[in-house]
Length: 237
Image 1 (cartoon, rainbow, N blue to C red):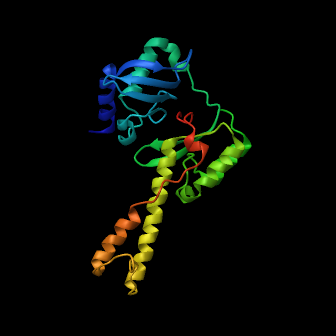
Image 2: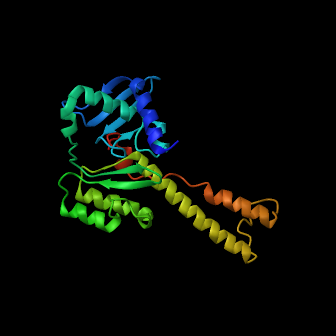
Image 3: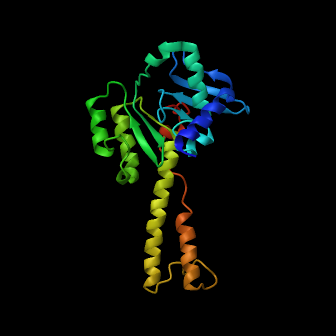
């Protein structure tokens, strides 16, 4: 199915996707919602605009479909158009703080969204660590702790969402594991035994290579970033 057909399919399912709205912003359409789906599950939905890739839903489909929308987002858009009528087309979400969130497109990227009137210091952070579309440059994944420390200094109200932290952890673990694998395999090529002393029985070279790949790509413990990850209030776009 092409992208338009996939989005259309979710728009069709949207009519029965939401059983109830459990939390919503007061007096306006765009804002943060908690919805109860037709299956009884609860999802967080952040409504920020009428187009794809502007909004967020915590459902599994949104995280993997690369469409920038899902049936819960489309269901809320339908309800909001019915509720506000034509005036909804003129509503705009006003960002009051910076936020780091994931962009779920063909590739997953960390994106910095700025408040409506960003300070010069915030703009400097964008130019230092992000590209022209405000996506985190790949070479700064390993420097992410430095990025959020600078962001915290410039904007105390800024938000870093938990899925961003999980993504950074996974990417850095993979990079670190691949570097370890290359180093161990280089040692093996030179006739050294990287696993010597760890195993009770000798292994053939091909077995050592397989073991090194599994060990290098298993990943270590998750890194934590203090209150940015621990604060349950950091859950909205």
